[in-house]
Each structure stands twice: as C-alpha cells, then as structure tokens.
Image (cartoon, rainbow, N blue to C red):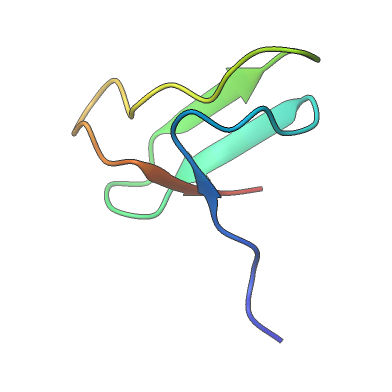
Length: 47
C-alpha cells in the first residue's frame, strides 16, 4: 500500500509531514494549509 500524498494548498490533519523530494519536515497545526516545502519548493508531502 502506498503512502497518501498531501499537496500544497490542502488542509490535512495536524502532524509532521515529510517532503517527498528533499525530506524536509514541516509541522502543520489543525486548520493550517499545507505550504510549499521551505527548502526546495516541492508541493507533495507524506505523513
């Protein structure tokens, strides 16, 4: 089973997400919108 991909602009559950390109961790609070990766500007993350 593959991991769900979360994209920039979505509002996922609170948690720490990992960039699928460079591995940068991004922590999201409940109700926040997923930003682009601060390191490489990628738009896809996994939880």
